Length: 135
Ligand code: ZN
Image 1 (cartoon, rainbow, N blue to C red):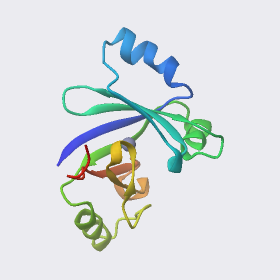
Image 2: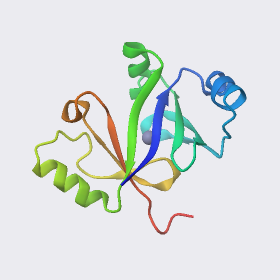
Image 3: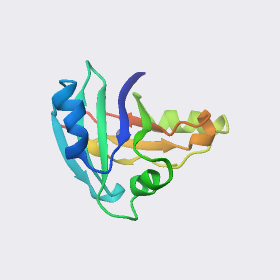
Image 4: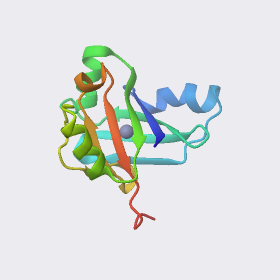
């Protein structure tokens, strides 16, 4: 397993880039809107893992709710796994509370699934599997 990315919630990606890109010096390699999750994302590699900036696209978005409750900051940690279904089955067997029982398509055309923060001691965890067919 590897750290795939760290998701950071921000009310506005453009404002967050003033720090992450302009001040710190990271480069934006990918941006996209994930309609299903109600977010716009920008990916900035830090070595192999990436910072994933998340901006809500509407007020009902889970990230909008997170910003309301907790403010801007670390939203989730994503771990890359080889077989996301096997990882979910193992977690379920160990009694971890899952948000997604089945993987879905996330940013960058990866398969993703979220594990509830109550399972990990307060950290929202995202599992990511890179599909071989992905460009
Ligand atoms: Zn993520």
